[in-house]
Length: 364
Image (cartoon, rainbow, N blue to C red; front, side, top):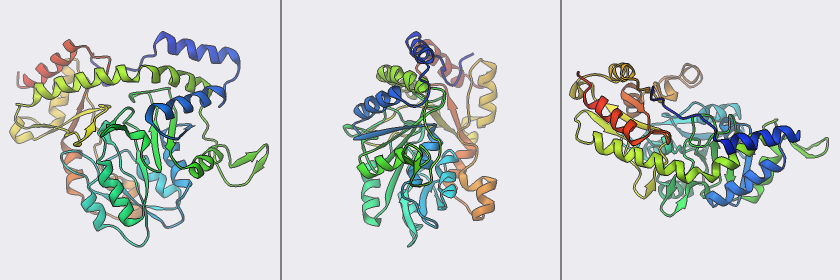
């Protein structure tokens, strides 16, 4: 079976985890310190702060500046944590539509939803596709907004000549098992702001500024040294993994480009996609079958697929109850027609060609 992700540790990663387990130093410590320093250097950020997971990274970022009633512009086509952590911090996610080609936040729709309460914007580098960071930066300056970049799926993505981790107020990563880099559970927040760096470190440890001295409310959002040791090893081979993902994405794009009724995600101009997911949009009338039928046929050929995401955040029951019902056409169209196919670094060229051939012979 060709799976959607390769979740397999190398011998060096297993050895690193075992070394820490045998040391008895399991909580956040020297390995986390080392991971933070190495990750910050890799992405070109001044600071990197480890935490428990990608959701915790977003939660901590919002906790660092958001006040009760503040509004945050959030794309509706994303994982729920991008929006739900705003709500849990007392803010209100203002759910915006996305561009139908790149699947990324539509700044024109976002601008229509600016109010006097708008405090921040949370663009998502969805599936590893970097946002137009210059356009977002100009937008945020115009409206005096803090930027919380959701880079949970975008390890190694680049914009112009820089890694996306070196831009903005907060850049939040996840190391969940399906991601380009994984440690089990884990997260990272990059920032170039010294004040935010200090605050995030206190917030992730119960607001503790000294032993048993708590000067603010916080949470236990620490990463373990076991996870950090795995992360440090994975960071050394990130470029190699990204190169293979890029090769696979290039083969898929070339192999499907002449098929009518199937459209690949468009990479942002001046961006370098990290290919966490390779997603296509199916037009059932032109293609000859719908997304779900294609998924069934690929499964019969031993190929796993996924639907990311089957509904927008504005269609989630919890958000409909909190904020009412409304329409976001591009998000809804994507949710109905999108399909993710394998692109991960564990695929051989033969695997990728088999996937292409299986899609092309869908009617057989």
